[in-house]
Length: 338
Image (cartoon, rainbow, N blue to C red; front, side, top):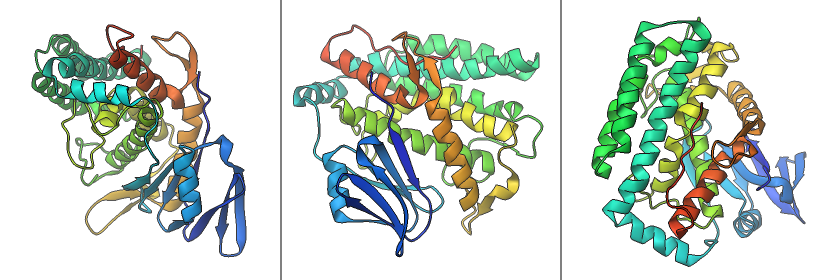
């Protein structure tokens, strides 16, 4: 099994990263803030005014170290990538599948069914832990029906429609999961997020998307050609396909933990002139530390039956998807939580 490597989160403004032999050096002015062996680093995430030397950019591209840039408040900007890795025959098969409605639907409906099942599991977990709730119970019943429908979807468009209906049901009761806090959730708002809960969800989804891109590139797949999400210039459609399995199972549960354990407060957020709500700088550091901790928690993968860190789940699913596209398995086994 692949080893979970470290991720560097560079949040201090006006820092400069460069390569020194086989290490990554972080400086601010003449002060050295840190130096890390590159062999132990999988990704470098830069927030705001962070500069990177051309030589380090080239090194990261050559060594398949993800180098990703965000605004100071966490909006994704760009990533540096090197030449494609893996077998070109795998990617050619992926492209043919993406143009085949039947092949697309066979994968897409399983991903949608898994997303709905994971959303249902999050609601069921809340009922088990905190007692009966009529709204949650009704939503669980609706999601069970949607899950069965998704498995039988006859086209990708039908699968997308079922996914949209299920997401509306899930988020209509999401506020019931935010317990005893001042955080209000009145629905899912993406562009821009207009409240702290949506801001946390969007930020976490963005981080996991980049994990999915790195995982797909690592197994030789093209993250920009998907089966559920349509092709769009600049959109990592296959990574977004993979993300669907992790939204409720990883991202939503993580965000709820931060809120319900009072690890974040309302004054940890700032509102921009546009109305967008973002994490403040100190709170973002705290968030990223908790996110990195969560990535190191080990679980038993439901299909592989191996104990793996949460941070390697995108790699596991990318590997399973690559096996399916190569013809090694009859079906793609999506990620499911209990």
